[in-house]
Image 1 (cartoon, rainbow, N blue to C red):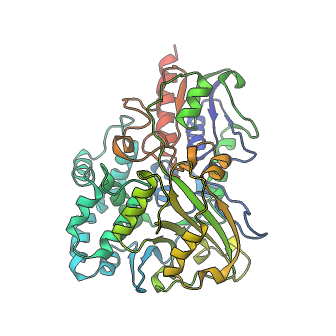
Image 2: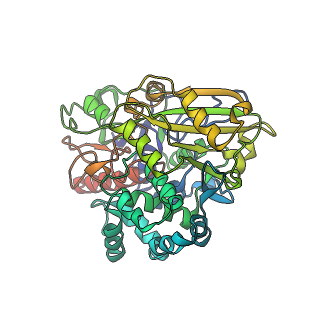
Image 3: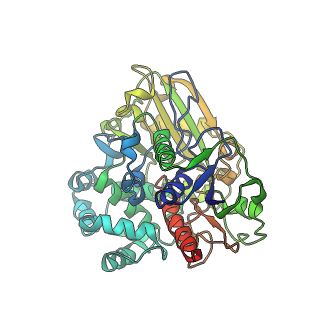
Length: 471
């Protein structure tokens, strides 16, 4: 009998498997697709030689992840690549705000009235970032806080809605960039703890940047898989699990799946019936014949570029997708251009480009023209650079990855109390009513992103349970 079986080879499943294998447990991992990766894959979606990331492409949380930093992933080929600017947010007039490793450079891009306010917001937390990120990403009770005072101070600032936090800014540039940071988790700007979302992304960028991975996001998954195999773990692909009986006997089963799928497979009935899925995503991967023709020079020097004219436009786009059930007229977009630092991703002189916008969960329309008209506001002539497109709406995203229910790439709405208390209110969110079954996907704390911390935290819960069973 195996000690642990893991279902789902996304970053969290791979991390959980590796963490348990290095503790000496026998581990086997089962993946429905023909390769490992989940939300961290790389494929030729458009033309030969153009290597795209179908989901996550830039990794501020990954490079800061305590789980990833504790594993020897660089030994297995993982290389983080940093652009001159971590992120840029251009405006229609050709100017831009930036998120840089330098707090001073970032603050200066907001203008003199808001530079001091921004520095006062982030500088108290940066010296204690490593302890803070570990405490923040290990919640709830998987570990005692290393710095409870700083965590409490962060909570006092971050638990408020982002719209309250940004009242300290006088001008639109700072408010808009911060609104864009919050929108990365598709949460309405006025929601509970959205201030913390924006603040975490800002601090992550200042601490260690906002990198892409050389060769594509698949390198993260491949490094985790190679490390797991070296530890003696087994990986089985092309193996779809429909019920527990499909799996070999084990002392524990860990699922990197949506709560809905877990309930169906493990026979948990209506245990997760109150779990909510959030807005979906409409994503376009482009093969371009050259760099994106941004009007703002800053956008040409950053791998990640946020698109939204002002905070009101971003807020309206989020409300349309998550509350009003319609696509936004002027979508907020997150875009990534890996070719700024990684020439391996496309033929010489050409580039891959990645863009997504938020749409209602399960929406089946076509947002391509709307997105490209929005891009043209900030990069006139963009359409003239397009060689090919690969378009994926909510249905296509869900078909590629069953965790993306209705196109929700966060595997659950990151709004309200569910932002922090997921997949349900519990002191042990990784456990289920079945004593041998656990969940480790992005539906568990700390939530969405390629960082492996949900898998890391779940592995701790499994290890404690198995240790208790030893005579």
